[in-house]
Image 1: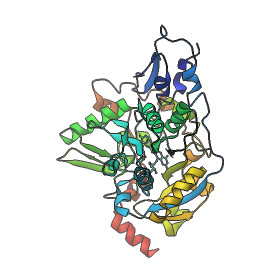
Image 2: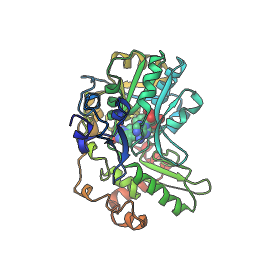
Image 3: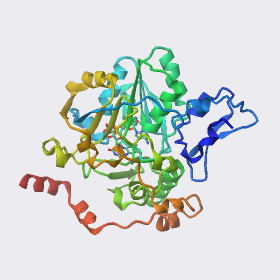
Image 4: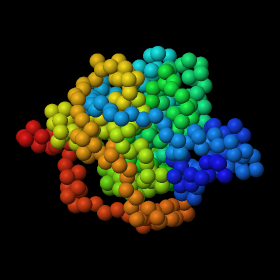
Length: 387
Ligand SMILES: Cc1cc2nc3c(=O)[nH]c(=O)nc-3n(C[C@H](O)[C@H](O)[C@H](O)COP(=O)(O)OP(=O)(O)OC[C@H]3O[C@@H](n4cnc5c(N)ncnc54)[C@H](O)[C@@H]3O)c2cc1C
């Protein structure tokens, strides 16, 4: 067997194999946990090995050795407020759109399913803003990127390290007009688990959810704070106090491949990497901003060219990898697989999701964290001034 099935649970679910297969014998289907994996129709497979050759786990995409490290903030703070960290993704995206290009990234559809989409209009960029802490569906997307590049269009592709590597191994050549932005990633829960959780939250709020923001800055500024809405009611709180979110933060519900992620290190796969600059208060206290600071890794010459183009719209200071990764472990190593991962998905797709939440997603909050998190933003501002 010289096909993608050799990969087993090491598959990252990028769906590049489905898109490259000349015999169309690979389909991508959810497993019992709701993660997408390739399924091969062996009767049509001719063992050509293309799926293996273009797989980002079995074949290495080009990586960088020594990124330049910056802390940065987008000066348009209204836009940055809607983004996860310092809002750097938007000026990069605008730069590509200004060249008549197309931007690819993760958006929710009308049912809050996270999917990669193409955006060619500034007015739609908001759909890609803010992190969705669930695996995004990239089926069919690499082919769209290839077609646009063949038409001589500029393209920005953003996604997790494995998704960017998937695109690069799919294309298998340097493309001058392609800018890749990898998002530093802790790991991804399954789309089916998120769907069940969204339905559960909808029931709690008395109507189907219309939006779910994992990184709402409205009440607590730059933090791990969510807001769920259904048009009439909303609920917001710290991620640590929510069953789905805390399981995510404690690495309990990730795809198996996330625990052996080969992109969680300094050898970045994108031209630029974006993340939260956790620890900025400690290392660059004067640069802290309650609405978020981005960590930017400029990994290639092309990344540098784009960063130079948007510099006048940013506040920037130089930093180093040690400081950047001190409180951001996934810049150094993959997330650790906890023992509870063995059974965490048992019963998630049954009839009684409420019981599943109470048992499998039960969480304890450290009393110190609870007290710290109860302090309102206004009081924090005063305390900061007194320091
Ligand atoms: C699952 C996940 C885990 C993360 N883990 C960490 C972490 O451990 N440490 C850290 O510092 N940062 C992490 N991040 C990245 C961080 O949350 C921000 O996405 C990043 O700082 C960019 O923020 P921004 O303000 O520049 O842009 P934003 O406007 O917030 O841009 C969002 C960008 O993220 C992309 N995106 C959003 N959701 C997804 C998704 N599900 N899959 C792929 N791409 C997506 C969009 O396409 C867009 O490019 C994670 C992001 C995700 C999606």
